[in-house]
Amino acid sequence: MKKSILLLLTCMILTFTAEAQKERFMVLEFINVESDQLFEYIEFKDLMEKVYRQARNDDQIAGWDFWSLHSGADHSDFQYIMITYYDDPVKMMSGLDETRMIDYTKIAYPHLNDAQVVKLFENSLSMREMPMRLYMKEIVCTDDNFQMKPGVLASFDLMKAREGNFTAYEKAEEEVFKPIHQKRIEQGLMGHWSLLRTALPLGSEAKSTHLTMNVYKDYMQFFNAQAYEDMEQSDAQRRAVNEGLNSRDQKWVYLATLENVVR
Image (cartoon, rainbow, N blue to C red; front, side):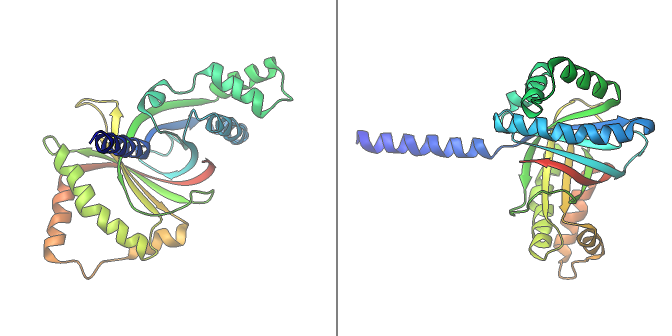
């Protein structure tokens, strides 16, 4: 009897651990760089890839992306989106402080002395602004084995659930829209889709409550997906789609290309 109880407890713990490991948390930083400093910043983000790779090797982050924006609410506000992935909400909120980033830079660039590393960071901070930062948790995603690599295209759709429709909106995304995206993936019209919920900022004045990330391997796949229309969709399915659309406001859509990636 005791062995049976112990075995059951062990299975429960393993199941809980496996579920916890599936959770993903992300910090999205929308970055503005002055036009006369874009070239310098391109060099900087290549350097940052090596630094974040050290952080990944040290298990401080689960991944890192650097996206170049092509369109959005006002393209002059942002030129890039930087995403840092975490497997733990505490790590997400703590982030990587400047001291740790400098330490990782020293590892990635052993030929630089301490003064050169500090100067590098001072220069990078002076050339960029981050007018918007979102802390998010992944709620649901498609079942796929899509590999993120430079050249991948994505649309970041910022949503705001209508007042009183928060739960209804998430249910619609999971039960109505996810199957649609899953079907597109199986038809070769999409690479990956996920729904994120905003952890911070919160409150009625927050500009968005959710974000959907729609990923395509290239422009050809992206445009084919836009032209696709599911003629087999039933009247009931169309009504469910319309109800889901009415449960939220689509605030902005940002189209971007992946330039650097760490996994």
